[in-house]
Image (cartoon, rainbow, N blue to C red; front, side, top):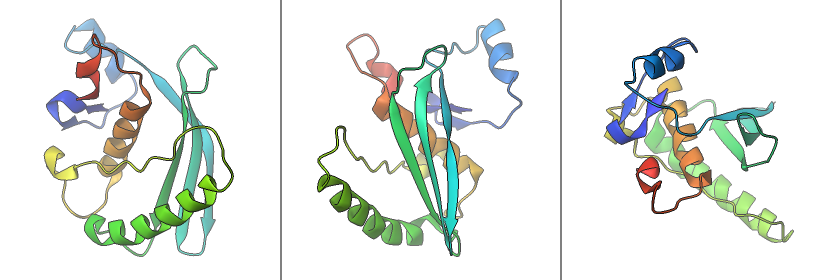
Length: 145
């Protein structure tokens, strides 16, 4: 669970969300589920999934996560992933597909995370990706901060 406004990351059982709502310490504004597949080719792992709101089948977006397994340093891997992202983006632009291909680069240091990649980094990445998919109007601007 990531609470972006307070820059908190918490690992807990799925029932924790319900407990927090009952205690009125946190209210879920929007809930999404990710459904997809994982592929591995050599030292690269690719996860691709659709993002849909709970209780709906309307597609909100597609998330693609790339991982280069030999490197666990966030700083070093960003250089390699940046090049790979540019290649994917150029290939997709040639196809004239609807939508936008966006690279999300969270500021892990704001959450107190080290340079060594962990599951907490993944949680922050997914939370930031979702923030790009949630529509923003004047009443919900704080949700993306």
